[in-house]
Amino acid sequence: MDWKLFATTFGLVFMAELGDKTQLATLVLASEGEGKWMVFAGSALALVTTSALAVLGGELVSRVVPPGVLPKVAGVLFVLLGLWMILAKGD
Image (cartoon, rainbow, N blue to C red; front, side, top):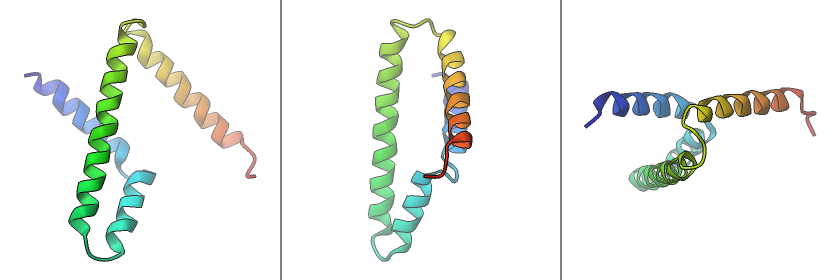
């Protein structure tokens, strides 16, 4: 088992999820009353499902695109999305 890969993945996903809209939505749902464990179970299952889809998608993409290209493409997309958000007019 590759513990370094596990720790890196956990750290990156954990940091990416802190304070994002999904975590804030979960916080709001949990604060609205009883059933906090159902909110936890629902949000945990949603994160596991989206992570599974990402892993499967990565598996498929890696068959066509060389692995060294993917981080560069993702970085460019993040920069472009960031610029778009900064420059977009508040409609």
